Amino acid sequence: MAQISEREQLIFHIAQAEWDLFQQVQNTGGRASCQDDPDTFFKMRMSQWMVYSDEALRSYYDDCVDAAAAGRNLVYEKYARMMESTYPEEYAQLKDSLPDVSDKTEIVEKIVGINLEWDAEMMRDYPNLRSRGRALTTAQDGVEAGSSMESYLRGELLTYSVRTLELVCRDTVEAHERGENLLKQTIANETQFYGYASLEEAEAKHASLP
Image (cartoon, rainbow, N blue to C red; front, side, top):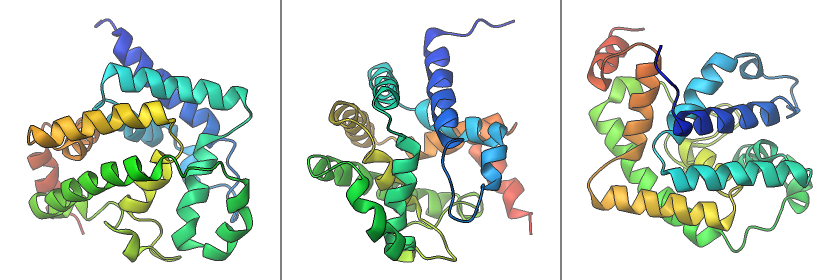
């Protein structure tokens, strides 16, 4: 049996911390079905965290610990911020209860901008696989459509500490400069969790699905 590395343990602990917070989120329409699906949740969240440096992982785990000690729920805050473009009236009622993020917006938009480029590449190169995910931009958000990748990412990034944002931004910019696509790596991780040997195999499979 393969030994689990310290990095793999840290990624699992991050996903576990997020899952515990996710269980405490109260949806306005009642408990969401995804709150009863830990398998999908862990695969998705671990796939994302696998692309970042050890420094970024440790910093975000500290964010989770610090937020819990302060009585904050980072997952709730993420979903609350996503409501700005899907449920603006409800968002207006709760936005003043959310932490001030004015010191984070510039670095968040830098990270979001690169991820939008990466997501456009995924739409171009793996259209069948990517079309089963969220819409691309905030302009496409709505009650029926839900939140886009852009809105989801922005909402999540705004819950990170400035230190974590700086590390994630560093990882993002360095990957971009190397011509790498961290979003592609994230989706590749997801497909491997589901038993596909490659993105190409997953794309071919999804092309045949209704």
